[in-house]
Amino acid sequence: MDFIMRAFEDADAAPFAQAVNQSLDTLLPWMTWAHKNYTEDEARLWFHLTHLQRQQGTANEMGLFAADGRLLGGAGLRYSSNPLIPTSIGYWVHSNEQRQGIASEAVRRLVASAFSQPDIDVVEILVAERNIASRSVAEKVGAKIIAIRYGLIVLDNGPVSTVIYHLHRPSSDESEDGIAR
Image (cartoon, rainbow, N blue to C red):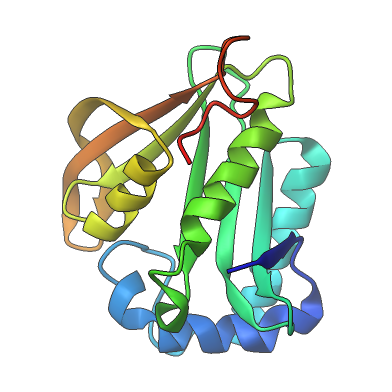
């Protein structure tokens, strides 16, 4: 599926809140920010934070939209000021839009964007070990498991085992973005 990635706007608050509330079955187990009766005001606060983070150069959160404007989900990069901590990526897709390659394509685009910056050599994906859908996305784009650690992700029911995936900047003899197609 072809889609557009762009910064969230205040006008996206109603569809964002609706998408979160309609996707609780797939968000609640893994995303602590998602909750029943998620509101438009909460969405707007999130959007304003993402704009501030983009201005500060600490993150690049994007909305995922179908050509007809329908909200499909969100994905973003979080940059680290510590050279020992890699840039990380996160993603979610509306439960009605899953299993269409949207998350994988969003990850591919964001990783290519990250690797266009000369100081980023690794992008990290942290996934709860039992989150099979998100693990499938990481594996589909060619991310490699480097470790499994307990407690890096804390869900509502407590700390869980976290699978750490890495994508590395491609060498000159690899494809442009270094990601499996």
